Image (cartoon, rainbow, N blue to C red; front, side, top):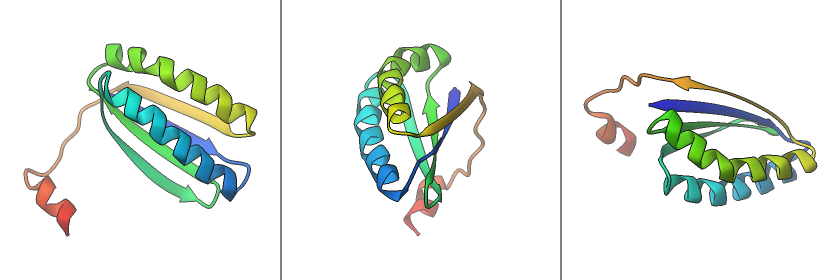
Length: 102
């Protein structure tokens, strides 16, 4: 599995809302090419963190094409973005689905 963590510092709350909507569109496309899951963290009034879980680095590379266009748009709108990623291992409870319902 490959994980990519993207941090976006938005110029204001309004921009943050716009970025989140735009990201949803990109995520829908990425889910078709190997994105397994995305976790969105509202880190502050003007910061978002996305944790994207990919099948593999190869799938990430394929899905990255959609993200690069969006990334340029975010930068043009004044966002400051940083990203890190790498091969990963996930350990979770066998009862994970039941815990989400609570």
